[in-house]
Length: 153
Image (tube, rainbow, N blue to C red; front, top):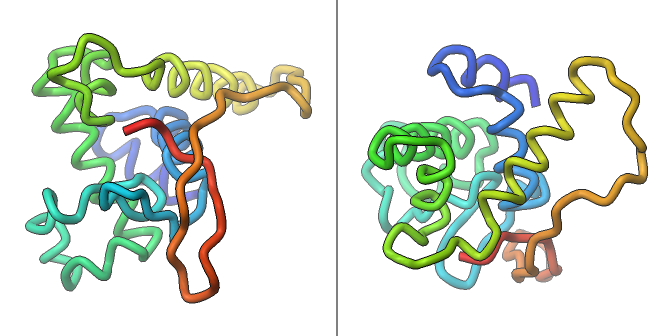
């Protein structure tokens, strides 16, 4: 998504990291919704971050891909800043800040980012290379619910 590059460059977060988070969180499904209330491409918890969505018209904006991306990047940036490192920030982002482990979430995101860096750099990558897999959640969209990948939260 082109917006990932624009937002990432603007706030100083590598766009490949943003894309890797989206891949793990929602499988790039803008209508993804987890059982704990995370929504959209970056699976932002609208109940917790409702204030960030007010600027964009409220909680329903969570399913607008551009809005979800912008809010998700803001949350990710806050998590990294608060935690003091990228790895610790990813642990905060997935909601595991107070847990002993993030269940492999950070490693999945960083592996996805490494793969995307190779793609962007024009390196040869296997098009069928296994990417980090996320767990499954039910998506609530205008159509009937379907299963999509999502990280363990």
